[in-house]
Length: 150
Image (tube, rainbow, N blue to C red; front, top):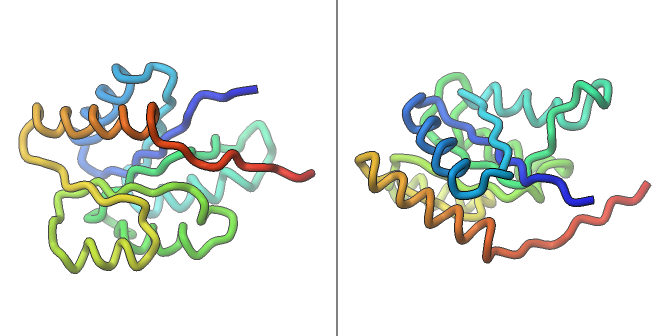
């Protein structure tokens, strides 16, 4: 049974989160976007995917869009936790941030990020980036089909 793709959007900026949700929703209405407004909330979300009663569990994300500059726990620390945990390390993570600093790009790739995108200034440019990314990721990108052994 195929399920709708689930995206975990980790973004503290309300405007950026709204743009991402609208663009992804327009591009692929079947995509379910869950949002964490800071790094701590993202970590709790991922912990909740595997624990608790089945009916209370959060849906497992097929993709994580991760901002870097966030309160509580920053994006690089979230990325580090995702990629060092055997339960979550196979989830593709795409950094979506305003930082174009080479040190951030290098650190993100050292930690195992799958892609690094810099948010352009302006609504139209940001929407275009998300639209092009969404078309690529959901229409052309291929990933292995997980095999779950009971």
